[in-house]
Image 1 (cartoon, rainbow, N blue to C red):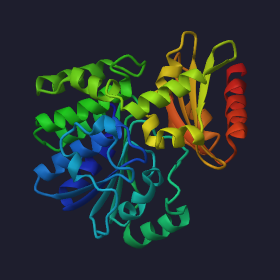
Image 2: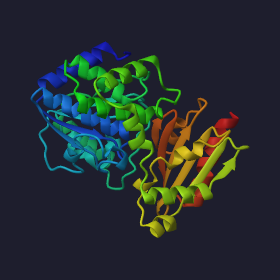
Image 3: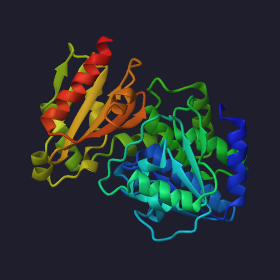
Amino acid sequence: MSLNKDNLNATVRLIETGQKFIIAAHARPDPDSMGSALALARGIRQKGKSTVVISQDGVPSSCQYLPDTKTVVMKTAKRGFDVGIVCDADGVRRTGSAAEAVVSAKSLLIIDHHISSAEQVEAEDAPARADLEAVGQQSRSSEPLYLADKTAAATAEVVFDLLNELRVSIDLEMARQLMAGIVGDTGVFKFTNVTPRTLEIAARLTALGASPSEAAEEIYENRSMVNLKLLGVALLAAQPEKEGKIVWSRITREDFERFGARDSDTESIVNQLRATKSAQVGILFREVAENRVRVSLRSRDGFDVNRIAAAFGGGGHAAAAGCTVEKSLEEAEKAVLSEVSSWMES
């Protein structure tokens, strides 16, 4: 465990003294954000406290199998929380429209494993930064508390350590939720972010009854028919750049309309682009509206795509990041590909 001991102790005190908690996943949540939020909420409830888990985009299909997903809300009118917690994001703005409820809490806690300087909210209805700051200043008496471990492969590892520090008895349901986070953020233990600590925690979760194979199948081998069709579109449109070091593709508004699809139906498609032989970076451009393109970036061999996303106001971590570009599809493709090419040449 490489958590700052002072921050860890402060986090334990914050949770022990609070009674009402709101816990937010980031916009377009992945298994790590959702699994971590659900496990932490369950652990806090075990201590006799109340929780609300909020996700502006609901529960992704890859996480529908997890316990407690039916308790997740997309919005809430409740206020007066003692503690607002953000899971798997470097700031509250990445929670999208959930941010207003989160910052209304008396104290704010950010739990993450890849703090970056950029904050990006892809949701069009996200509150403005000035509004969030105003709400936060009115309700909070202190600065946000950060609990982050950059050596962790997933936020689920950080939550696992926190739950143990809180002396919570991790049950089967929590173990499955945390396993989803680890399996999701390590690509079933094949990414370079896997450490001995990652495997140790996964082993302990397995001993508690969680199944790595269940998580792998639900997250990576449970595509919807719409997702499968969009994957076909993306593979047919795939293009190589820089002698195959970059493989990119696009999904247009016409493609979404043809299949009655939403942006959430593109989940994991970008990973197939990165899986191409010799590709260091995979990029998927999705035209979600006129002059609005969402971009997913994945990498291997140590290439840091977070710095690419940050150049366009986005964020994430070294091997997986994203951003939204307010340009036409063609202009967005040209700008992002130029940025990636420049980094490769530097």
